[in-house]
Length: 213
Image 1 (cartoon, rainbow, N blue to C red):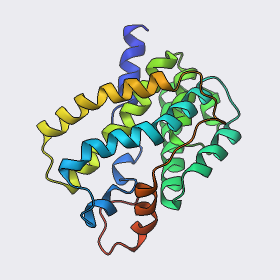
Image 2 (cartoon, rainbow, N blue to C red):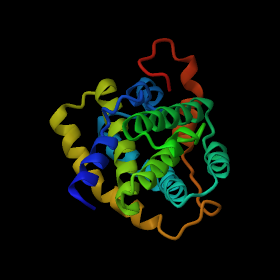
Image 3 (cartoon, rainbow, N blue to C red):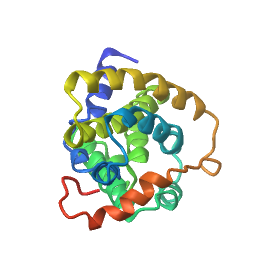
Image 4 (tube, rainbow, N blue to C red):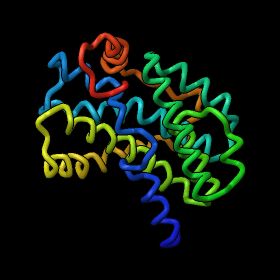
């Protein structure tokens, strides 16, 4: 990977990328409102999320990178995202992400992709931009984790230093998931995150909300 490739990947993996990720907590807001999850439980929650949902997203990212049929990838991801909010958020983020990458690269393959989940969009963009597959998968997961930690900072007493320490500790978990995702087909990948899924389903009934999901 060249220095230019690295800089481009770092920009795409930035949690502050203007695609609307900061509007979503993927169930975390409901869990904090119900006092099920607090700052002490957050690190373990995200580690478990990475081990389950993160693995599925990594496999989907690889599939899109390799040129798999986006319809099949979307169907698989939609089937595993039990909450409507989570499905809609992932599709919205994927569409905005590809639109942004198309705007900066001008590659027509990105403009023709249509509706696509966020992890698949990241894999497609990485392939189109000729970035390394392993680095793209790691960056995709890093973006997902950073978005969750950012949401937690607005929901829990989690300062900037503590958030940075948490992200640093999660890097090992991300690397582990990247390694585990090698050689797993999309048909064999699965995810079991009932607590977050159920929280996402209850989220529309929350009286006051900071997040869409």
